[in-house]
Length: 205
Image (cartoon, rainbow, N blue to C red; front, side, top):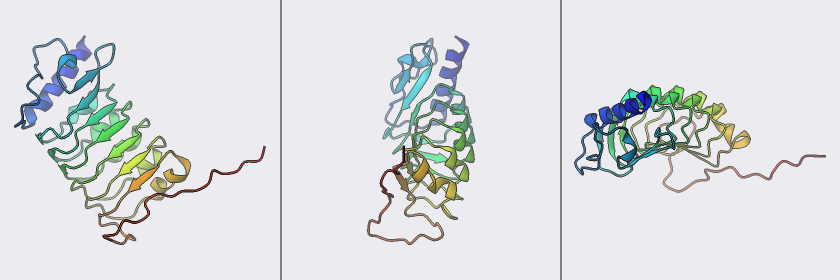
């Protein structure tokens, strides 16, 4: 029960940091036993939070580091809001996370290299923010990644070889780094090839 109280406390702390002009968080009532009856929160069969779905909700404010303690979280969907500040490095502790959707916000700072520890991550969509710095080579450890969307930020440097190799050795089907300040890429208004397609390797029996 302590864990469940704790998860509710974390989410309620996050609610207090956010501005919520559309009142989408009014059901986030800290007096309830656990957050599983709150709107936009989904729990598993032991009442631990596995999803937070608040895309396109008109929310503004920062992400609190304690979100990294929601240890069973699988989906963190906060896209298309007015979120600001950095992506907490503590999100690298969310080892069950499958989808991290923070795109179309006003997030600043760097992409935390700690995200390379989230081995189950399939969707990492951070596009349309104000993220700077380099793409961490640690993201190359995310062999389950299907979509890596980093376009429309202010990223610099080059795309690490470790990340490019996911196209060949991992499950990556989309890697989008357009509209950044990356070295060795050309800004273009025309759509360009963003996917590498190859035949399956023939193996002799």
